Amino acid sequence: MNSLKTTLLLAGLTGLLLAVGNMFGGTQGMTFMFIISMLMNFGSYWYSDKIVLKMYGGREVTPSEAPDLIRMVSTLAQRAKLPMPKVYIVDSQVPNAFATGRNPEHAAVAVTTGIMQALTYEELEGVVAHELAHIKNRDTLISTIVATIAGLITMIAHIAQWAAIFGRGDDEEGGFGGIVEFLFLIIVAPLAATLIQLGVSRSREYQADETGGLMSANPLALASALRKIEYFAKHAVMPQATPATSHMFIINPLSGAGGWAVSLFSTHPSTAQRVEKLEALAKRVR
Image (cartoon, rainbow, N blue to C red; front, side, top):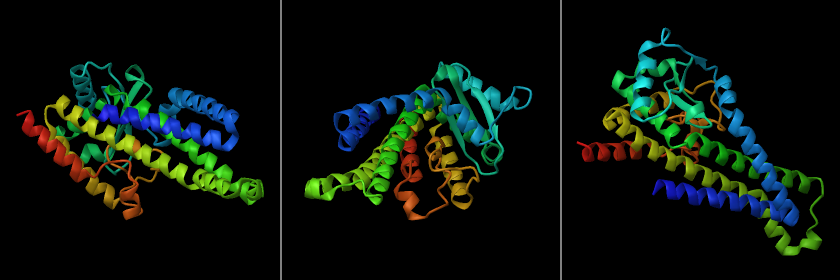
């Protein structure tokens, strides 16, 4: 069900992009936006993992530097029939983790120093399993594509706003229909793109929780980890965290900033809902 939902949302987001391109420049505009989105996706596909790891100061570790962590990742990767990903540690006291990479053969798992101190071995194992689930389900690629297309739609809306400010729009020729199209372009389209992006992200989080819970054979440990990470996230914000990358983390690192507005437009389902599903999963696999 989550996979079908993701496919439908991706199709809707692509259709929205083409509609915006058509509205902005007719058939040529639609074709141009499609080509631009493909080029942006290509760049994101090849370089997004390196950019994100550098942004957060991730440091790749070896078995001699972090033997327990490497052993944990290796064991879970073998259990999931995945290639061994690279392992990174991010120097931050705020507990969190994320996965990145264009495919399972070029993937990385990153954890903060804070999460290694705050969680028990079983809880950290659940978190690592969740991140490996994202790699197994190819969520890192899906989220990159969605973020790129949504960002492109928002960029077009900003261009349209500046064009209107400098007198490019012609209300007399367009009439009421032109005004409606313009409002759709600058208000409705970027909002719809954001909501679709959130829908995809939340759907993939539920899927990764389930896959990770089964992979670690301990859904309740993952549920406990989520509660702890959320507590820390609400009381401290990672200095490097940005809205553009918040969807990558197991818990939104910006949970403690912005109050209800951030919760409304969060890239993650509520932790309470995730814990409830994991508790139900634990009862099924007993």
